[in-house]
Amino acid sequence: MYRSEEVRKLAPEMDPLRLGMGWKRSDLDKPKIMIESTMGDSHPGSAHLMEFVEQAAKGVHDAGGKAARYYTTDICDGQAQGHDGINYSLASRDMIANMVEIHENATPFDGGVFIASCDKGMPGLLMGIGRCNIPSIMVTGGVMEAGPDMLTLEEIGKYSAMCQRGEITGEQFLFYKHHACPSCGACSFMGTACTMQVMAEALGLMLPGTSVMPATCADLKRAAYDAGLQAMKLA
Image (cartoon, rainbow, N blue to C red):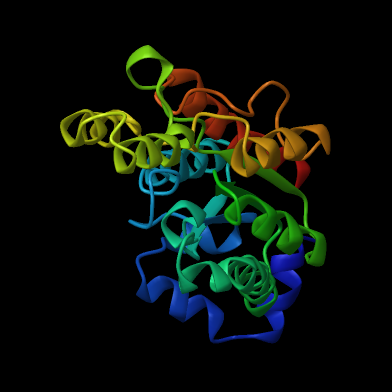
């Protein structure tokens, strides 16, 4: 018997509450997969994750299951650094892990698909997975495109210092700032975000070959869909 069915027998209020949010009666008897993501308007690594959430949910649906979407948005270390905001960075990681554990154990599921891209979202979800005894698969939001001449966000600090020293003009610096992040996805250099994506795949928690893919690549959407299918196979 599925874990969700065992708990369902103990909580008779569960069925009417799910019907109240639009579930079909036939959904109540299906294997249930939690899709947890860091989707939100916090930074380019999370702003686009809804499209991957929907693809993963479609994979679950097509395999005969019912997906439920949960969200705990992460912060951006790039926006937090240089001021007191960075003091919340590691705390945010731990809070994401806490919420994964809370979401899974408050309403038990039979499997999970976990979607993030960046520095604290990836490890936060991985830590949460470690606390939950369900089959789990990670999906990433990929990596953003590089700017002109392979410009990346990593170089903005350098150009800021050059501008302050008068080595480049304010207009040149503005150009770099306006073109360093041309798309959604994790920052396009081998920083914490991309390192965590690679580590998740190395741990066997992602489908092979799906880390650090371009965020704009159609294959990444297919990977999210396939993760939904695989979660159902493991449930």
